[in-house]
Image 1 (spheres, helix red, strand yellow):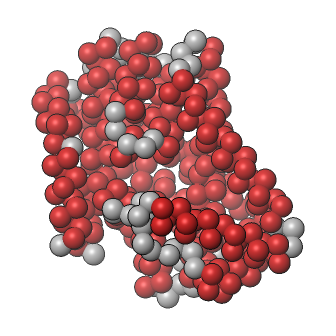
Image 2 (cartoon, rainbow, N blue to C red):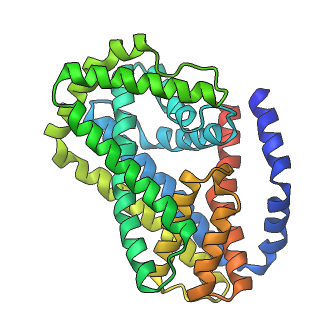
Length: 324
């Protein structure tokens, strides 16, 4: 009942956006909408396959179909949960694995590896996108500043990991320090839940440390995961290209479309507004209208993109949550 109430509240709070989507739907060709739907389905398929390969790396056997529906549920939970956000989404994956009898440490490692690999691939595309925007003289502060924040954060995390993984004692000490900071931030934000207790860190730190070196020793097997993540981003770009084509835009300008998607994803991750509301639309509209579409067409494409990338997975995740 709580999740149902939160879902209804989200619909109410975003009702203006929903109305715009409903009013815009008839302006877009149905055939290309079906193609866009296929690409959105493929996005989650690639993500599910990436998870399946990572699970397999740790000897966890699970069908990609189960992961597919679980990802939709995870997305729904991460959006509507009043606290936790990303942690709630990852927790959904871990809880489901525990129901299948998988070790919690392996599940935690699998999720850590997935997100580390995702951000590695994402940052690669981000750097390419920033380069393209600089060439086209379209670098704006609201794009550059979040990009710098993400790059600094990634560099800091990588540096800390290199230092803390030199020996197990240092790894445990850093883990306890990080857990304390994480819990303080949660409390400051009003989240009265201790996600990383000292007891849990001490219990699982050695297995996580061992798991890291296991992944490093099997690094060649990560190539399939990288491929799935590249294809996942590629399907997102093709979805955007399909929407641009549906309103007669320059859908062959893949470089600009890739930059538009990557910048939108970046702003969704770092924006203080829910799912980057407002900021994402501004960035996407300005980039699309500058190179591939008139302003009116750009607004329509952005509205439909939000439908496929946000509302469709959210609604699907709600029904999966209710069913499961």
